Image (cartoon, rainbow, N blue to C red; front, side, top):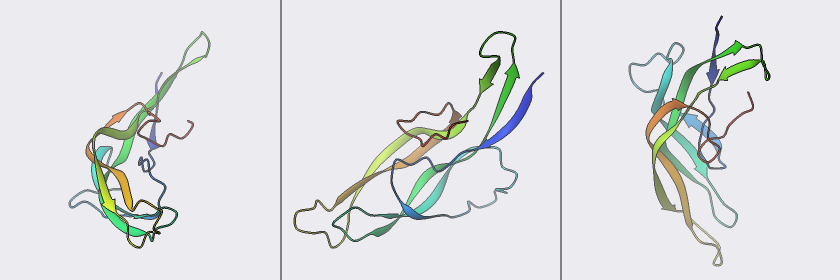
Amino acid sequence: MKLQQVVLSSLPLLILASGISALKPPNINLRTFIGCAVREFTFLAKKPGCKGMRITTDACWGRCETWEKPVLDPPYIEAHHRVCTYNETKLVTVRLPNCAANVSPFYTYPKAIRCDCSICLTTTTECETI
């Protein structure tokens, strides 16, 4: 017997950002969309010694089908938890404004090229314990 559930993935960027917002892609009903897609996001890039700068980039977003199946042997469950994560990225570097003299003004972040439902890899995605 399969128990299916949908797991929402979090914004999988390797950046510490605040003020994250997203723009809705055209012709997609976000309440019913199941799958993984590239979506435009805006965030505030900042680091100590520099003024923050709003950046718009592409990131992975979506809901992936997952399931768990009880089994008789330990660990007593077969789990298949997939999240919307990067399949291909490009690193982009920008210059932050008003940096102190001893601080590098360069800030690098990932831009999504292709996204897929896959297992969560902590090297590219912020994984929550399921």
